[in-house]
Image (cartoon, rainbow, N blue to C red; front, side, top):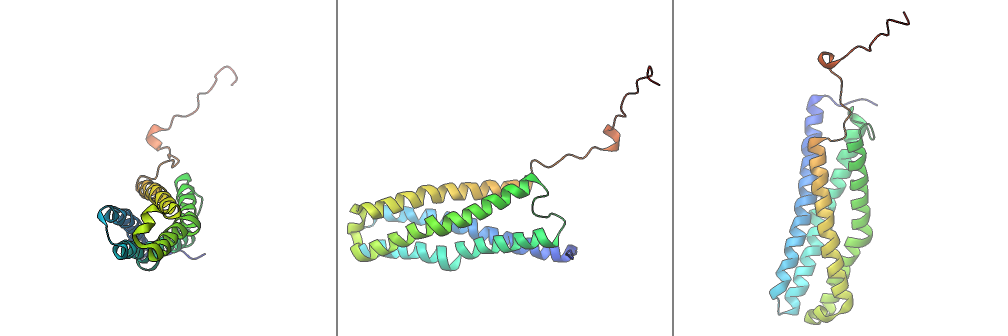
Length: 182
């Protein structure tokens, strides 16, 4: 597979960082929007907040950011020397990224959609609806957990732990020779 040159890698890194910013920043925004619900007394406003959550998540920021991270990470693995599983920290990033996308797709997104649908039908009565409250609780808890994991993954990218340490020539000690056997 042909490898990108330095300028191509810089462009790729820029797009990757932009995608990361969208995904994490959007997810933090979603959590922040939840706290707007605390003083709401109008069902239309509650529905509007849930609709905003859904729109920011699905259409504008979070999902495009997650897909962007996946695609730029794939490009990094294919077109640079990093590879897919060359280092443990890369493997951890792949596991977290794929798990977060799948969990968001099959759990966070449906919980969020359900909240929007319920609040659209019931208005303020949603705040007494067990399905709405369950979806809100699960989405807030697991959404926050996912944001924390994404932030940890960001720092894993920066610090690159679990990388094999290279032995320098200055620290190299030749094996001891047993003079008795020579």
